[in-house]
Length: 324
Image (cartoon, rainbow, N blue to C red; front, side, top):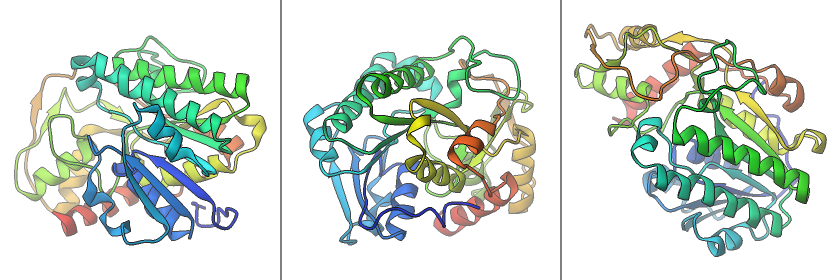
């Protein structure tokens, strides 16, 4: 269960792009705890220095303040690296609709730079973050790899393009790439601030301060909310996946489904709050329902998520209470 028993060769070197972000900083922490070297590449545009401040004095941790849009920075960062965990990207469906050119530049061009740098530096494995948004308007549940619909946002398009480039890099150049389609990840260090903040940290933070949250739509939209520990497990297990499964993409979730209003009510219950939410308009580009079939990741990556939604939400709430 989990990733505690995932073993790498001594002194393995990991490059984590976007390592000062929510998912990236949790990966940095997990790998450092295993005693390996971590290089964190982040330009702090969405990541935060406070997410990695506790690692800065660790002799096995190196922080590079740099941008994946610069190929020479990517080349230097990949030197001597065994495993790349590529998390750097701009998220948020609504923001991508407002700024499509920026998303093209960061999420597509930046990812291609990292792929090329990994190839030229003979990196062993290239594991990268994709997204459940690539399923677009495909109506069937659960979501299954290979059954995608029309894309609904520039963000989704950038993630789909990354998948195609990664597949080509495996086919043409022999770089072992593994795409992880994350489903609504949540947990400690996720930013609750701003217009584009993820819904769970936003609800928790607002309720902690007795503010009245807004739910976009009727609250009946559902998501396969995935606790951060499961995502760490998927990344580490992908690094040890057999070469024969390289070039593929995998759903990474718990495999459950929660209505947004039920999530809200559970957070209220755990925090002992009785605050009714506002209901706002639905967000453009959002998918109504999301639920993952994780059987491919179970079979080919040995992925076995051990944190269900309720365990994860209680852990996350505790962290926000201690750090609010």
